[in-house]
Amino acid sequence: MAATCHFCDARVVGETCGSCGRDQAARRRVCAKCKKMTPVAEPQCSHCGQTFRNELRWKIPVIMIMFVVAIGVSVAVRLNL
Ligand SMILES: [Zn+2]
Ligand SMILES: [Zn+2]
Image (cartoon, rainbow, N blue to C red; front, side, top):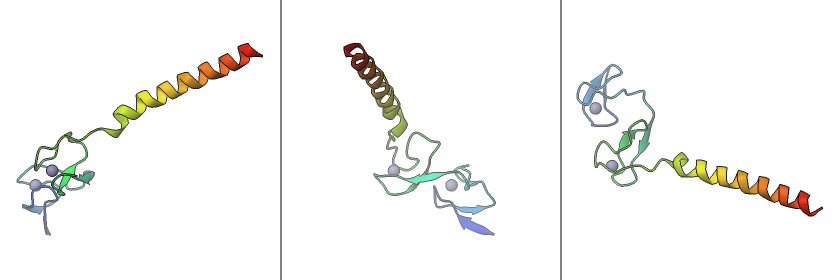
């Protein structure tokens, strides 16, 4: 059964696009800039080249800092007692 590629709009038979070579079952997201589907695994939009910010990349250090601050506060509270 032929379908349309989610990423390049070419005709696809099977799971992999013969035009762009992308797996049709791969996780995808909508580009904020061009509103087209692009694979989650790729750091840039396959259509307009927009670079995606990895949301985890800034959340991990923030969580680490919060954790260190929480430990620091609990130690400070204990020392004051
Ligand atoms: Zn394609
Ligand atoms: Zn795009």
